[in-house]
Length: 153
Image (cartoon, rainbow, N blue to C red):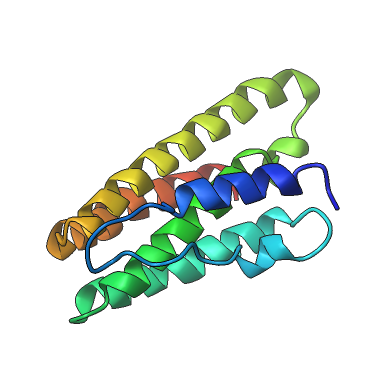
């Protein structure tokens, strides 16, 4: 087992919100598949999981009764984001050493912003504000994704 796996499990359980109230109260979800397998996940796999869950969010928030699916998706995105935050994008790894550190800090700042937006999104979903949640998905989250892809992909 990777030395990061126990920490990822703790983060997954915490971000799953083990104590929840109301109609969205459910047991903690399983680890996202990309993190449940042995070995260190590839950044492309983590980002693929984020992309899949972003699509799920858009669909779930647009359909009646989709709050539970949206909540599962946002919580998986939180876990995947934490794992991706510790990775080094290929575009940064290939930079000369003198340029690498500031770019890595910028990447980690963007990932922290993503986590912040995901926390706000989770609050919107938990409080039944699907329109606000969908606006966050189509606005702030997509902008973060597009800006980050432009810079590091």
